[in-house]
Structures are given as C-alpha cells and as structure tokens.
Image (tube, rainbow, N blue to C red; front, top):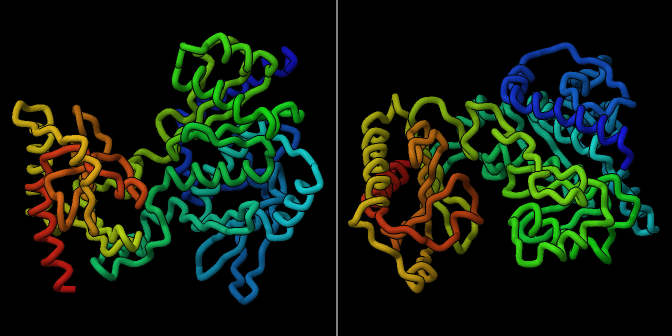
Length: 429
C-alpha cells in the first residue's frame, strides 16, 4: 500500500469517524423526504449524503410481477427498488447476479474490495435502512433474507406485534443493529473472496491480491484475533512474524453490532484497531439492541425451547399498564441490589449447566436504569416451568441467547410476577 494512498485513506477514515458522531441524527433525518444527489463513482470518501442518484424514484405500481428499478452510482448496479403492498423495498443482488458470481468463483475468479469500498458499503447500508421499509439481500447460497427498515419501529405493524399469542410477525429479529450488521456482512461476502470465520468473529481482508487465500487465511485470522482483539502475548513474536508480509487491511465483525478496522496488519501496534461507529449503528431512541424506548415499558417474551420458536410477546406500557410497569421496575431495582449483596447465592457449575426448561421467559426493562447506572436496556431470561430463580442477564434477544444456561440467581420474585401476568393475559386471549 503506497504512502499517498494510506494518507488519503486516513483522511477518509477521519471523515468516517466524524460521520459516526452524527450517524444517529443523520439516519433519523433519512426518514424524512430529502432530495437525492448523484454519486461520483470515482469517489471513495464515505459521504453518506451522496449515495443515491437524483433521477431514481420509488415505483408505485404494485402489479405482479413487481416492477423494479436498478439504481446507478457506486455499487448501485446491485440495488433494485420497488414498492410492494405500500412498502418501499430495496433488493440487494438479483438471482442472476448471484448465479454469475457463483459461476465466476467456481472458475477461479478472485474478488477483492478496497478499504474505501468497505467504508462505502457500511455507510450505504445505514442509509438503506433509513430510506426503505424493507431491505432484502440475497447471499451466495441463493437464499434471500428480509429485514425491516427504521420506519418499522414507528409503524402500526410494529405495535401489533405485542398482542399476546396473536403477536404478529415472528420473522423479524426486532434487533435493528444486528440486522444492519448482517446486511453489511452479507453484501461484503458476495463481493469479497477473502472472508474468514475465527473465534466467533468474521475477518474481511481488503485490497487482497490473492496472497490471502484458503491456504493461509485461517492461520492469519488466528494471529489477527490474538494480537489485535484478545491481546494475547504468549506467542506475540509468532503473531508479528505471521502478520509481517501483509501491509493491507482487515475489517473485524463481531457480536452482531461491532465493526473494527486495522489499516495495516503488519504495523506492529496493538493500538491500531479503530472501532467504527463505537456508539452504535442505530439512532439513539432505538439504541436498545432490541425493541424501542419510548418512556418506561416492559416487554415479555415466552419461548418454546424444544420448538425453537416464540410462543407469545407482550408489551406493558407505562401509561396503560402503570401498576405492572412500576411493580416490575421495583423488582428490577431489588434484583440489582441483590446481585451485589452478601445475600447473593452463587450458582454451582452443575446447577448452571443443568438449568434447562422447556419454556423460557425473557423480560426487557425498557427506559429503566440498567446496571451500574447506565441507560442501556437490560433483559433477564429465566425458566417459565423450572429453574425460575436461575437467570441470565443480557442486552439482546433471540433464541440463541435465550437458550443459554442460567448463571445467576435471584429471579424468583420477577418470575412469579411475570408468570402471573402471562397466565392472566394469555388466558384472556
């Protein structure tokens, strides 16, 4: 990587970090109708205001087959817009394009994105979620995943998803930040050959001429992981030796919300890791990992562990369910005090591993003070039919998290209260 290019990229990266600070406000502004501008296809700067060409518009014809308009601009050839059932939709990659990529890969063709391309795709994806109601992306396996845009979280459809057994759609994750993260990664995996999974993280190598390939990417990712992420020092000399030949960059995806970047892998400094969007990928009022925060409320999920599906979802609002919300907030405060008290009961290793029940409950405390005075939404998971005093504390949602063993104690009072609400509300339904 030449010095001039690196200097230019650092300038672009500085611009990105400035944009990160304003990202939440910009995405909310994106929900209003704004004038679109043309894209300079030669520009690598992550200018989030110049991603969509002026001449494009959302189609209103909803006849079958749904008419689509292919966008122009940087990577616009892979974006197709339409309107379906009154919703604005953007489809990323057509079936024909995916088939072409698969064929070319099978014939040995190599695909590599530059670091500037990666920054563009990250910002472009953020803008897609603010501009469109539905974002569909097709992967190399031909499977299309569908995600709701920001507008979903203020829609009647979203509000209708909290009606007990008839809770509406269960195809969405309700995890906006994870959705954005997954779409970014899905777009990149089609256009970049060198993507490696290691240690629960995804490593995307940029500006790769093929020197990073299936033969060495796994071991290289091991060195990147231990040197830059875990800061393991036992084999530091070996890690530095492994990284020495590579003056190109790597993007590290982790936790379905975090994206980090190392501009030059052989820089020899653990401090070279830059966290992109350190304050999150989503606007502040949705910065909860799951669901929204509009005053104080409690969301209750009931999960069938064997069936791997949600059975019911309830939302208790601070205005319509004031007593229940206040009671649960008081119980949540008591639980936080208990965790740091002398009365805390430690869960043994055997009990921890055996804390399994057929049905699990997740309770999200929305708009309430989290641990250690933070404003981050907390959620407790515990057994609905057994191990009700054993719980897991999380900041997210979904089957993978809710099915984990319970490592904490002290949730019995919250469990009793929540299970009484579930029996009362679900029987009425």
